[in-house]
Length: 355
Image 1: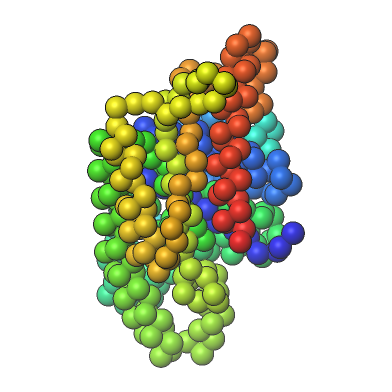
Image 2: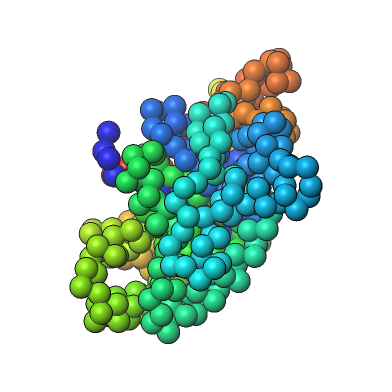
């Protein structure tokens, strides 16, 4: 197994497309392949944390202590929020001594989310603007995700890191992408998902251009004073250095499906015209990153109705649901069908990520 850590985010500015369900189940799939997986919940809604960890674990994370203030302070250090505390104090480097919790049923470690993570949006917004003005300490702050990945690689703790983010194009999510080797865009084929997908493609064009100027200016400024520039840049995992570049792996679609005679499946819905236009927007997004591929569809993910809620109650991946979790009779066959589709998408993502 390569010692080089891989970092991945499932990213979209539209909610309700099954992003958290898909990313947590793909993380489980990667763990089943023998990889050491860290799942970082960067969504203030903390849905992934609630899905993957038990009630006992979440109580330990968020409710330890006799007083509310004590519990809140403890929860900062038990979650992803803790790595930002030095940044909030004006430091350029994150707290690297992270606290993770094991999700036994998913087979991954979780860096839990925190509801007040939304406050970090302002921290990252200020850091982004300062970095545009060639303030090199701020430039290091916006690369917090790269710092985390480098720390985990240096400690030889994980092979793959998943970053879960909320549906936003704000500064915080931009900084997550700076620490990622690749990203995937889960989407759906309704009107609003299509427009959000197109908006995302246009946003990437502007974002890539702005960031390229920021990086060049800060490296030039930093290089005027730092004798050991390469050593200081290494923890940031900068795109365009050491052969590293942010890659767009492709998209998945959330679909309704029905059985056809002969056992096959057919996509159904009233939005075929939107499904057919997604490939062009995907190519546009890839082009903004300098990619020239032809096929970016990673798979169709079925609408799983109440099964994600059942998985949430059981704190289990879809593949791990059994009768004692409340999945019985024909639901077991439905589970197997859902798992097959998730595994198809996971395989496509895995092959592209590890290439």
